Length: 429
Ligand SMILES: CC(=O)N[C@H]1[C@@H](OP(=O)(O)OP(=O)(O)OC[C@H]2O[C@@H](n3ccc(=O)[nH]c3=O)[C@H](O)[C@@H]2O)O[C@H](CO)[C@@H](O)[C@@H]1O
Ligand SMILES: C=C(OP(=O)(O)O)C(=O)O
Image: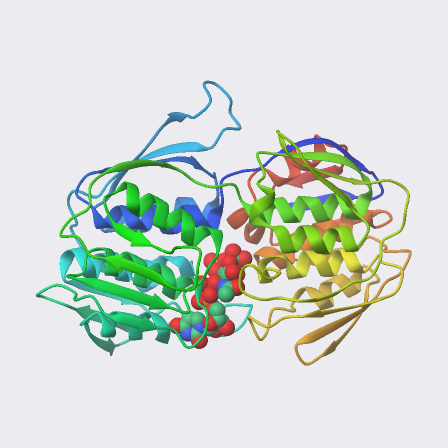
Protein backbone atom coordinates (compact mmCIF):
# COMPACT_ATOMS: atom_id res chain seq x y z
CA UNK A 1 0.00 0.00 0.00
CA UNK A 2 1.29 3.47 -0.90
CA UNK A 3 2.37 5.91 1.78
CA UNK A 4 3.03 9.64 1.74
CA UNK A 5 6.26 10.81 3.35
CA UNK A 6 6.53 14.44 4.41
CA UNK A 7 9.43 16.26 5.99
CA UNK A 8 7.90 19.39 7.50
CA UNK A 9 9.18 22.90 7.83
CA UNK A 10 9.17 24.32 4.29
CA UNK A 11 7.01 27.27 3.31
CA UNK A 12 4.92 26.95 0.13
CA UNK A 13 5.55 29.29 -2.80
CA UNK A 14 4.35 29.18 -6.39
CA UNK A 15 1.21 28.12 -8.21
CA UNK A 16 -1.15 25.21 -7.62
CA UNK A 17 -3.63 24.41 -10.40
CA UNK A 18 -7.09 23.60 -9.05
CA UNK A 19 -8.79 20.55 -10.55
CA UNK A 20 -12.43 19.98 -11.43
CA UNK A 21 -14.60 19.24 -8.40
CA UNK A 22 -15.07 15.60 -7.43
CA UNK A 23 -18.42 16.35 -5.85
CA UNK A 24 -19.68 17.95 -9.07
CA UNK A 25 -18.07 15.50 -11.52
CA UNK A 26 -19.73 12.45 -9.91
CA UNK A 27 -23.38 13.63 -10.17
CA UNK A 28 -22.67 15.07 -13.63
CA UNK A 29 -21.40 11.69 -14.83
CA UNK A 30 -24.50 10.06 -13.33
CA UNK A 31 -26.74 12.58 -15.15
CA UNK A 32 -25.60 10.93 -18.40
CA UNK A 33 -28.05 8.12 -17.55
CA UNK A 34 -30.92 10.54 -18.26
CA UNK A 35 -30.30 10.77 -21.99
CA UNK A 36 -29.83 8.55 -25.03
CA UNK A 37 -27.48 11.17 -26.48
CA UNK A 38 -23.84 11.84 -25.68
CA UNK A 39 -22.89 13.93 -22.65
CA UNK A 40 -19.43 15.46 -22.94
CA UNK A 41 -17.86 16.56 -19.68
CA UNK A 42 -14.70 18.66 -19.59
CA UNK A 43 -12.36 19.31 -16.68
CA UNK A 44 -13.11 15.95 -15.06
CA UNK A 45 -10.50 15.27 -12.36
CA UNK A 46 -8.35 12.12 -12.44
CA UNK A 47 -9.45 10.52 -9.20
CA UNK A 48 -10.10 7.05 -7.87
CA UNK A 49 -13.79 7.92 -7.31
CA UNK A 50 -14.15 9.00 -10.94
CA UNK A 51 -12.55 5.76 -12.16
CA UNK A 52 -14.84 3.71 -9.92
CA UNK A 53 -17.91 5.54 -11.20
CA UNK A 54 -16.76 4.79 -14.76
CA UNK A 55 -16.91 1.11 -13.80
CA UNK A 56 -20.31 1.47 -12.16
CA UNK A 57 -21.77 3.23 -15.19
CA UNK A 58 -20.09 0.65 -17.42
CA UNK A 59 -22.00 -2.01 -15.53
CA UNK A 60 -25.26 -0.32 -16.61
CA UNK A 61 -24.05 -0.44 -20.23
CA UNK A 62 -22.77 3.13 -20.47
CA UNK A 63 -19.89 3.65 -22.86
CA UNK A 64 -17.26 6.17 -21.71
CA UNK A 65 -14.28 7.41 -23.67
CA UNK A 66 -11.71 9.85 -22.43
CA UNK A 67 -11.36 12.08 -25.45
CA UNK A 68 -8.06 13.84 -25.11
CA UNK A 69 -7.01 16.80 -23.07
CA UNK A 70 -8.83 20.08 -22.71
CA UNK A 71 -5.79 22.31 -23.16
CA UNK A 72 -3.84 20.81 -26.01
CA UNK A 73 -0.97 18.79 -24.61
CA UNK A 74 -1.13 19.99 -21.02
CA UNK A 75 -1.00 16.72 -19.03
CA UNK A 76 -2.42 18.58 -16.04
CA UNK A 77 -5.61 19.71 -17.74
CA UNK A 78 -8.75 17.86 -16.70
CA UNK A 79 -10.01 14.92 -18.70
CA UNK A 80 -12.67 15.32 -21.34
CA UNK A 81 -15.11 12.47 -21.05
CA UNK A 82 -17.63 11.42 -23.68
CA UNK A 83 -20.38 9.49 -21.98
CA UNK A 84 -22.81 7.53 -24.08
CA UNK A 85 -25.75 5.99 -22.20
CA UNK A 86 -27.78 5.21 -25.34
CA UNK A 87 -28.35 1.64 -24.19
CA UNK A 88 -28.95 0.74 -20.56
CA UNK A 89 -28.38 -2.99 -20.27
CA UNK A 90 -28.87 -3.36 -16.53
CA UNK A 91 -30.78 -1.25 -13.99
CA UNK A 92 -29.11 -2.93 -11.00
CA UNK A 93 -26.26 -1.24 -9.13
CA UNK A 94 -24.68 -4.08 -7.16
CA UNK A 95 -23.50 -4.07 -3.57
CA UNK A 96 -19.81 -4.68 -4.31
CA UNK A 97 -19.62 -1.45 -6.34
CA UNK A 98 -22.08 0.82 -4.47
CA UNK A 99 -20.61 -0.07 -1.08
CA UNK A 100 -17.26 1.34 -2.19
CA UNK A 101 -18.53 4.81 -3.03
CA UNK A 102 -21.54 6.45 -1.58
CA UNK A 103 -22.22 8.81 -4.48
CA UNK A 104 -22.91 5.80 -6.71
CA UNK A 105 -26.29 5.44 -4.94
CA UNK A 106 -27.37 8.55 -6.89
CA UNK A 107 -27.88 6.41 -10.02
CA UNK A 108 -31.25 5.49 -8.50
CA UNK A 109 -33.00 8.73 -9.58
CA UNK A 110 -31.98 8.81 -13.26
CA UNK A 111 -32.39 5.05 -13.78
CA UNK A 112 -35.89 5.17 -12.34
CA UNK A 113 -36.86 8.30 -14.26
CA UNK A 114 -35.65 7.00 -17.62
CA UNK A 115 -36.14 3.24 -17.34
CA UNK A 116 -39.08 3.05 -14.92
CA UNK A 117 -37.09 0.83 -12.55
CA UNK A 118 -33.91 0.71 -10.54
CA UNK A 119 -32.41 -1.78 -8.11
CA UNK A 120 -29.61 -0.15 -6.18
CA UNK A 121 -27.73 -1.48 -3.17
CA UNK A 122 -28.08 0.55 0.02
CA UNK A 123 -24.79 2.40 0.43
CA UNK A 124 -24.24 1.77 4.15
CA UNK A 125 -22.32 3.92 6.57
CA UNK A 126 -18.70 5.01 6.46
CA UNK A 127 -16.04 6.31 8.77
CA UNK A 128 -17.65 9.74 9.18
CA UNK A 129 -21.01 8.58 10.57
CA UNK A 130 -24.27 6.93 9.52
CA UNK A 131 -25.37 8.19 6.16
CA UNK A 132 -29.04 7.39 5.64
CA UNK A 133 -30.92 7.66 2.31
CA UNK A 134 -34.48 8.11 3.61
CA UNK A 135 -34.79 11.62 2.08
CA UNK A 136 -33.84 10.23 -1.34
CA UNK A 137 -36.48 7.52 -1.05
CA UNK A 138 -39.17 9.92 0.25
CA UNK A 139 -38.48 12.23 -2.69
CA UNK A 140 -38.85 9.37 -5.18
CA UNK A 141 -42.06 8.19 -3.44
CA UNK A 142 -43.43 11.76 -3.67
CA UNK A 143 -42.75 11.56 -7.43
CA UNK A 144 -44.93 8.45 -7.58
CA UNK A 145 -42.39 5.63 -7.29
CA UNK A 146 -43.06 2.37 -5.46
CA UNK A 147 -40.10 1.65 -3.21
CA UNK A 148 -39.25 -1.60 -1.44
CA UNK A 149 -36.15 -2.62 0.43
CA UNK A 150 -35.24 -6.16 -0.52
CA UNK A 151 -32.13 -7.97 0.73
CA UNK A 152 -30.17 -4.75 1.14
CA UNK A 153 -31.33 -3.30 -2.15
CA UNK A 154 -33.61 -0.36 -2.84
CA UNK A 155 -36.06 -1.59 -5.46
CA UNK A 156 -37.77 1.38 -7.09
CA UNK A 157 -40.49 1.12 -9.73
CA UNK A 158 -42.47 3.65 -11.73
CA UNK A 159 -43.59 1.71 -14.82
CA UNK A 160 -45.79 4.57 -16.04
CA UNK A 161 -43.22 7.26 -15.35
CA UNK A 162 -42.74 9.71 -12.50
CA UNK A 163 -45.18 12.53 -11.80
CA UNK A 164 -44.14 16.02 -10.69
CA UNK A 165 -44.70 16.75 -7.00
CA UNK A 166 -43.77 19.00 -4.11
CA UNK A 167 -40.77 17.68 -2.19
CA UNK A 168 -40.07 19.35 1.14
CA UNK A 169 -36.84 18.11 2.72
CA UNK A 170 -36.83 18.11 6.55
CA UNK A 171 -33.11 18.91 6.49
CA UNK A 172 -30.72 20.15 3.81
CA UNK A 173 -29.26 17.20 1.92
CA UNK A 174 -26.89 17.55 -1.01
CA UNK A 175 -27.34 13.97 -2.19
CA UNK A 176 -31.14 13.95 -1.90
CA UNK A 177 -31.32 17.25 -3.79
CA UNK A 178 -29.26 15.66 -6.60
CA UNK A 179 -31.64 12.68 -6.63
CA UNK A 180 -34.80 14.82 -6.66
CA UNK A 181 -33.42 17.14 -9.35
CA UNK A 182 -32.44 14.35 -11.73
CA UNK A 183 -35.66 12.38 -11.20
CA UNK A 184 -37.95 15.41 -11.52
CA UNK A 185 -36.24 16.50 -14.75
CA UNK A 186 -38.00 13.62 -16.56
CA UNK A 187 -41.23 13.55 -14.49
CA UNK A 188 -44.58 14.61 -15.95
CA UNK A 189 -45.49 18.13 -14.84
CA UNK A 190 -44.08 20.51 -12.27
CA UNK A 191 -42.01 19.65 -9.20
CA UNK A 192 -40.96 22.01 -6.45
CA UNK A 193 -38.07 21.12 -4.14
CA UNK A 194 -38.26 23.03 -0.84
CA UNK A 195 -35.31 23.30 1.55
CA UNK A 196 -33.06 22.29 -1.35
CA UNK A 197 -29.29 22.23 -0.85
CA UNK A 198 -27.64 25.39 -2.24
CA UNK A 199 -24.16 23.94 -2.80
CA UNK A 200 -22.34 25.08 -5.96
CA UNK A 201 -22.28 21.45 -7.10
CA UNK A 202 -26.11 21.50 -7.19
CA UNK A 203 -25.96 24.58 -9.39
CA UNK A 204 -23.39 22.89 -11.64
CA UNK A 205 -25.65 19.85 -12.05
CA UNK A 206 -28.67 22.06 -12.75
CA UNK A 207 -26.70 24.10 -15.32
CA UNK A 208 -25.75 20.91 -17.13
CA UNK A 209 -29.30 19.53 -17.00
CA UNK A 210 -30.56 22.84 -18.44
CA UNK A 211 -28.08 22.45 -21.32
CA UNK A 212 -29.56 18.97 -21.79
CA UNK A 213 -33.01 20.53 -22.17
CA UNK A 214 -34.30 20.36 -18.59
CA UNK A 215 -36.49 23.21 -17.36
CA UNK A 216 -35.13 24.19 -13.96
CA UNK A 217 -35.33 27.46 -12.03
CA UNK A 218 -33.92 28.44 -8.68
CA UNK A 219 -30.87 26.15 -8.34
CA UNK A 220 -28.60 27.77 -5.77
CA UNK A 221 -31.61 28.88 -3.69
CA UNK A 222 -33.70 26.85 -1.22
CA UNK A 223 -36.58 26.47 -3.68
CA UNK A 224 -35.99 24.74 -7.01
CA UNK A 225 -38.77 24.48 -9.59
CA UNK A 226 -38.60 21.86 -12.31
CA UNK A 227 -40.98 21.48 -15.23
CA UNK A 228 -40.46 17.91 -16.36
CA UNK A 229 -39.74 17.16 -20.03
CA UNK A 230 -40.30 13.85 -21.87
CA UNK A 231 -36.64 13.48 -22.84
CA UNK A 232 -33.26 15.12 -22.46
CA UNK A 233 -30.62 15.55 -25.11
CA UNK A 234 -26.83 15.48 -25.13
CA UNK A 235 -24.72 18.45 -24.05
CA UNK A 236 -21.19 19.66 -23.35
CA UNK A 237 -20.34 20.93 -19.90
CA UNK A 238 -17.19 21.84 -17.98
CA UNK A 239 -16.98 20.72 -14.33
CA UNK A 240 -16.59 23.63 -11.94
CA UNK A 241 -13.34 24.03 -9.95
CA UNK A 242 -13.05 22.11 -6.70
CA UNK A 243 -13.77 24.45 -3.78
CA UNK A 244 -12.70 21.83 -1.24
CA UNK A 245 -9.33 21.31 -2.95
CA UNK A 246 -9.01 25.11 -3.10
CA UNK A 247 -9.76 25.51 0.61
CA UNK A 248 -7.42 22.65 1.47
CA UNK A 249 -4.41 24.21 -0.28
CA UNK A 250 -5.31 27.64 1.10
CA UNK A 251 -5.12 26.11 4.58
CA UNK A 252 -1.84 24.41 3.75
CA UNK A 253 -0.33 27.78 2.80
CA UNK A 254 -1.80 29.44 5.89
CA UNK A 255 -0.17 26.64 7.89
CA UNK A 256 3.34 26.74 6.41
CA UNK A 257 3.50 30.41 5.44
CA UNK A 258 4.49 31.47 1.93
CA UNK A 259 2.76 32.82 -1.14
CA UNK A 260 0.74 30.60 -3.47
CA UNK A 261 -1.69 31.29 -6.30
CA UNK A 262 -4.49 28.74 -6.57
CA UNK A 263 -4.93 28.90 -10.32
CA UNK A 264 -8.44 28.50 -11.67
CA UNK A 265 -10.00 28.70 -8.19
CA UNK A 266 -13.25 30.62 -7.81
CA UNK A 267 -13.53 32.76 -4.67
CA UNK A 268 -17.32 33.03 -5.00
CA UNK A 269 -17.59 29.29 -4.24
CA UNK A 270 -15.96 29.55 -0.83
CA UNK A 271 -16.72 32.89 0.76
CA UNK A 272 -17.23 31.54 4.29
CA UNK A 273 -13.90 29.69 4.10
CA UNK A 274 -12.08 32.81 2.93
CA UNK A 275 -13.61 34.74 5.81
CA UNK A 276 -12.38 32.12 8.31
CA UNK A 277 -8.89 32.07 6.77
CA UNK A 278 -8.64 35.85 6.94
CA UNK A 279 -9.74 35.77 10.58
CA UNK A 280 -6.99 33.19 11.17
CA UNK A 281 -4.40 35.59 9.77
CA UNK A 282 -3.99 34.57 6.12
CA UNK A 283 -3.93 37.25 3.45
CA UNK A 284 -6.24 36.34 0.59
CA UNK A 285 -6.57 38.23 -2.68
CA UNK A 286 -8.64 37.40 -5.69
CA UNK A 287 -7.02 38.05 -9.08
CA UNK A 288 -7.48 37.08 -12.73
CA UNK A 289 -5.62 33.83 -12.26
CA UNK A 290 -7.55 32.65 -9.21
CA UNK A 291 -6.92 33.13 -5.51
CA UNK A 292 -3.60 34.24 -3.99
CA UNK A 293 -2.95 33.10 -0.42
CA UNK A 294 -0.14 34.52 1.70
CA UNK A 295 1.07 34.41 5.24
CA UNK A 296 4.38 35.99 6.02
CA UNK A 297 5.80 35.80 9.49
CA UNK A 298 2.75 36.72 11.54
CA UNK A 299 1.23 34.04 13.78
CA UNK A 300 -2.09 32.30 13.37
CA UNK A 301 -5.16 33.39 15.32
CA UNK A 302 -7.67 30.94 16.80
CA UNK A 303 -11.21 30.81 15.38
CA UNK A 304 -14.67 29.60 16.39
CA UNK A 305 -16.36 27.79 13.53
CA UNK A 306 -19.39 25.53 13.01
CA UNK A 307 -19.87 23.53 9.85
CA UNK A 308 -23.14 24.15 8.01
CA UNK A 309 -24.71 23.55 4.63
CA UNK A 310 -23.61 26.01 1.93
CA UNK A 311 -23.09 28.97 2.16
CA UNK A 312 -21.85 28.02 5.65
CA UNK A 313 -18.44 26.60 6.44
CA UNK A 314 -18.20 23.19 4.68
CA UNK A 315 -17.94 19.95 6.63
CA UNK A 316 -15.45 18.82 3.96
CA UNK A 317 -12.96 21.44 5.25
CA UNK A 318 -13.48 20.83 8.96
CA UNK A 319 -10.55 18.42 9.39
CA UNK A 320 -8.19 20.71 7.45
CA UNK A 321 -9.17 23.72 9.57
CA UNK A 322 -8.58 21.67 12.69
CA UNK A 323 -5.05 20.85 11.53
CA UNK A 324 -4.44 24.55 10.92
CA UNK A 325 -5.71 25.52 14.35
CA UNK A 326 -3.27 23.18 16.06
CA UNK A 327 -0.69 25.91 15.35
CA UNK A 328 -2.82 28.93 16.33
CA UNK A 329 -1.95 31.14 19.27
CA UNK A 330 -4.80 30.18 21.59
CA UNK A 331 -7.92 28.06 21.83
CA UNK A 332 -10.22 27.35 18.86
CA UNK A 333 -13.62 25.72 18.87
CA UNK A 334 -14.72 23.71 15.84
CA UNK A 335 -18.25 22.28 15.81
CA UNK A 336 -19.35 19.59 13.34
CA UNK A 337 -23.08 19.80 12.65
CA UNK A 338 -23.43 17.63 9.52
CA UNK A 339 -21.92 14.27 10.51
CA UNK A 340 -21.91 12.81 14.01
CA UNK A 341 -18.56 11.07 13.78
CA UNK A 342 -16.36 13.19 11.56
CA UNK A 343 -13.57 13.49 14.11
CA UNK A 344 -11.43 10.48 13.25
CA UNK A 345 -8.52 12.81 12.52
CA UNK A 346 -8.39 14.00 16.15
CA UNK A 347 -6.52 10.98 17.46
CA UNK A 348 -4.15 10.99 14.50
CA UNK A 349 -3.39 14.72 14.86
CA UNK A 350 -2.64 13.96 18.52
CA UNK A 351 0.20 11.69 17.38
CA UNK A 352 1.86 14.79 15.96
CA UNK A 353 1.49 16.55 19.29
CA UNK A 354 -1.82 18.38 18.70
CA UNK A 355 -3.86 19.14 21.80
CA UNK A 356 -7.51 18.57 20.95
CA UNK A 357 -10.30 17.80 23.35
CA UNK A 358 -13.68 16.55 22.12
CA UNK A 359 -16.85 17.75 23.81
CA UNK A 360 -19.83 16.20 21.97
CA UNK A 361 -19.93 17.70 18.50
CA UNK A 362 -17.27 20.29 19.32
CA UNK A 363 -13.50 19.99 19.18
CA UNK A 364 -11.56 22.36 21.38
CA UNK A 365 -8.12 22.88 19.95
CA UNK A 366 -5.32 24.33 22.07
CA UNK A 367 -2.87 25.76 19.59
CA UNK A 368 0.80 25.13 20.15
CA UNK A 369 4.08 26.23 18.59
CA UNK A 370 5.31 22.81 17.87
CA UNK A 371 4.16 19.68 16.08
CA UNK A 372 6.48 16.73 15.70
CA UNK A 373 6.39 14.28 12.79
CA UNK A 374 5.10 10.74 13.40
CA UNK A 375 3.54 7.81 11.54
CA UNK A 376 -0.19 8.45 11.12
CA UNK A 377 -3.11 6.67 9.52
CA UNK A 378 -5.56 8.19 7.04
CA UNK A 379 -9.10 7.26 8.10
CA UNK A 380 -11.18 9.04 5.47
CA UNK A 381 -10.70 11.42 2.60
CA UNK A 382 -10.63 14.82 4.28
CA UNK A 383 -9.11 13.50 7.51
CA UNK A 384 -6.16 12.20 5.53
CA UNK A 385 -5.41 15.54 3.94
CA UNK A 386 -5.60 17.22 7.34
CA UNK A 387 -2.70 14.96 8.35
CA UNK A 388 -0.76 16.13 5.31
CA UNK A 389 -1.34 19.78 6.31
CA UNK A 390 -0.17 19.08 9.84
CA UNK A 391 2.83 17.11 8.54
CA UNK A 392 3.91 20.07 6.39
CA UNK A 393 4.35 22.12 9.57
CA UNK A 394 5.67 19.38 11.84
CA UNK A 395 9.32 18.97 12.67
CA UNK A 396 10.87 15.94 11.00
CA UNK A 397 9.17 13.09 9.18
CA UNK A 398 5.47 12.29 8.99
CA UNK A 399 4.45 9.12 7.21
CA UNK A 400 0.77 9.00 6.17
CA UNK A 401 -0.52 5.47 5.65
CA UNK A 402 -3.67 4.29 3.80
CA UNK A 403 -3.22 6.88 1.09
CA UNK A 404 -6.01 5.37 -1.01
CA UNK A 405 -8.38 7.65 0.90
CA UNK A 406 -6.48 10.68 -0.43
CA UNK A 407 -6.55 9.36 -3.97
CA UNK A 408 -10.36 9.39 -3.88
CA UNK A 409 -10.42 13.17 -3.89
CA UNK A 410 -7.03 14.83 -4.44
CA UNK A 411 -5.43 14.73 -7.85
CA UNK A 412 -1.58 14.61 -7.88
CA UNK A 413 -1.44 16.01 -4.34
CA UNK A 414 2.23 15.30 -3.70
CA UNK A 415 3.22 16.78 -7.07
CA UNK A 416 1.17 19.95 -6.57
CA UNK A 417 2.69 20.52 -3.13
CA UNK A 418 6.29 19.57 -3.96
CA UNK A 419 6.32 22.01 -6.90
CA UNK A 420 5.68 24.73 -4.32
CA UNK A 421 8.61 23.66 -2.17
CA UNK A 422 7.11 21.04 0.14
CA UNK A 423 9.22 18.00 0.92
CA UNK A 424 6.60 15.38 0.14
CA UNK A 425 6.78 12.13 -1.79
CA UNK A 426 4.76 9.02 -2.42
CA UNK A 427 6.34 5.76 -1.44
CA UNK A 428 4.83 2.94 -3.46
CA UNK A 429 4.49 -0.37 -1.81
C1 LIG B 1 -25.24 19.46 3.77
C2 LIG B 1 -23.85 18.98 3.63
O1 LIG B 1 -22.93 19.61 4.08
N1 LIG B 1 -23.68 17.84 2.94
C3 LIG B 1 -22.39 17.20 2.80
C4 LIG B 1 -22.59 15.72 2.61
O2 LIG B 1 -23.32 15.48 1.43
P1 LIG B 1 -24.10 14.09 1.30
O3 LIG B 1 -24.91 14.23 0.10
O4 LIG B 1 -23.20 12.92 1.46
O5 LIG B 1 -24.92 14.12 2.62
P2 LIG B 1 -26.24 14.94 2.82
O6 LIG B 1 -26.04 16.35 2.41
O7 LIG B 1 -27.30 14.17 2.17
O8 LIG B 1 -26.38 14.86 4.38
C5 LIG B 1 -26.70 16.00 5.18
C6 LIG B 1 -27.33 15.53 6.46
O9 LIG B 1 -28.61 14.95 6.20
C7 LIG B 1 -28.70 13.65 6.72
N2 LIG B 1 -29.48 12.82 5.77
C8 LIG B 1 -29.11 12.83 4.46
C9 LIG B 1 -29.81 12.07 3.53
C10 LIG B 1 -30.91 11.31 3.97
O10 LIG B 1 -31.58 10.62 3.20
N3 LIG B 1 -31.23 11.33 5.29
C11 LIG B 1 -30.55 12.07 6.21
O11 LIG B 1 -30.85 12.08 7.39
C12 LIG B 1 -27.25 13.18 6.84
O12 LIG B 1 -27.10 12.18 7.81
C13 LIG B 1 -26.53 14.46 7.20
O13 LIG B 1 -26.62 14.72 8.57
O14 LIG B 1 -21.35 15.07 2.58
C14 LIG B 1 -20.55 15.43 1.47
C15 LIG B 1 -19.26 14.65 1.60
O15 LIG B 1 -18.67 14.91 2.80
C16 LIG B 1 -20.33 16.93 1.47
O16 LIG B 1 -19.67 17.30 0.32
C17 LIG B 1 -21.64 17.71 1.60
O17 LIG B 1 -21.36 19.08 1.74
C1 LIG C 1 -16.72 12.24 2.28
C2 LIG C 1 -16.69 12.64 1.03
O1 LIG C 1 -17.16 11.94 -0.02
P1 LIG C 1 -18.29 10.82 0.02
O2 LIG C 1 -19.57 11.56 0.25
O3 LIG C 1 -18.23 10.19 -1.32
O4 LIG C 1 -17.98 9.86 1.14
C3 LIG C 1 -16.09 13.95 0.68
O5 LIG C 1 -16.19 14.37 -0.50
O6 LIG C 1 -15.51 14.60 1.59
